[in-house]
Image (cartoon, rainbow over all chains, first blue to last red):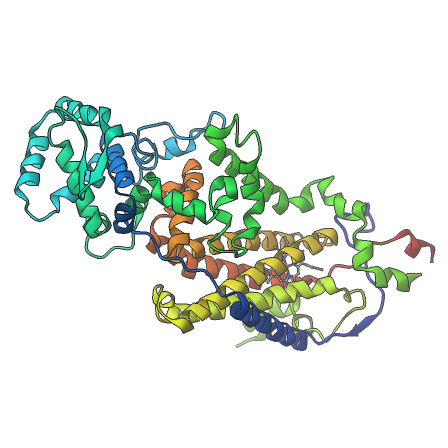
Length: 317
Length: 208
Ligand code: HEM
């Protein structure tokens, strides 16, 4: 070291001072006891939140029109999932980090076809109902352009969609089997059978909720419940949890970027990937602080260490 | 058997390296330099204590499976203990992080200590996130359907599917805790190997 120049932000001076007794095991034991007590007190005083999960059943009973409209958006390809792009489908390019189309390059790894997976397959799982069976046969034997025309005709009248006497009605002409689909899917949802159908589409044993969650998230109901709990992205979003709990407060910097321009304005369309990119860059900077001139001098320049080691410096004088 | 043969054994060489780097009196020292006397040093140990609480409460939650706590008063209380020990863990860790930053505690060959710390911090964030995703309640529905867009936008969502409960639970209770614990062990051992970083040399010292 003597031959090399001493770099104050990289090298540590040698210590020739005094040593005092230090009982590391006792300190550790006291720490565990105190942290344990504090945990118990906080748990008793504040508890923890546990709002029941929403089901498609609760959704379609609480907001049948929203459900039916969402079901239509799965069928006519306007839902969030239908238009998502990778990893679910190829409907859009997805977000871009400058010229990098990261998600598109990785491709469709969790294929979701909203027409088939969210509407037709569940309906086919329904126990035999003559009208529905005929409607499905009509759909399957029709050409794609006929299917599209039916859906388009239904969609045109969909702003007059009503739910009265437990039936979904739309004043649509030439909509083929679509009115039966939307009504029967709504009925199915209200009994809870759609939850089951979506969860078990990939088999009897399952731990994968991708489909029912995507369907739920396409509707307005999930968001309306979240809004009541102040959980929207514009309300600092997912770093919070229900109730007045601190949640993932450590995500504040991540959530912060979504609250300010340009991420919430001109860069909005690619906000997710930009915020993620930025956070990765900042994490890398934190990891590499010891190697970055300027950054690594902040501690010495700021002189906060005078406070931390004030007794040491007082002793020296 | 000649002594040289014993000396050349892998076992012997590993032991000699280990005890050379970390003799018992360094692993469990009974004295510390007098500068190790600030309240800021409490936070590393407190983080460790909180991590132990997190793991113990998590293990209790694991015994009866992921749905138990919804229907049991005792289970819900254990969940509260798990939540609050996590909050304490992050609080103490972040104070520890900034404390070490302002001490420039990477000096004197301690860069690896700093870097294992930062990686532990990032791994802990992922662990907590997957924990929220594994709650099987409204919070997990909302948090995962929100978070999927961020992760999907990076391309990682294709493999790390936050809507797949089984996958999130496995990461939360196996892979990430394992990483966090191994990293923490490495981190603390590195601190013991290197000793606690000395204060910056002040001009005063040169004069006296
Ligand atoms: C699970 C999380 C962590 C645990 C359990 C932990 C624990 C500890 C403990 C017990 C010490 C020795 C006592 C002390 O100086 O406070 C220590 C030292 C240290 N920690 Fe951590 N730590 C964690 C995370 C971090 C993070 C996030 C950073 C910074 C990014 C960090 C940076 C350091 C450094 C640089 C030292 C060496 C201190 C010195 O030589 O004075 N640690 N840590």
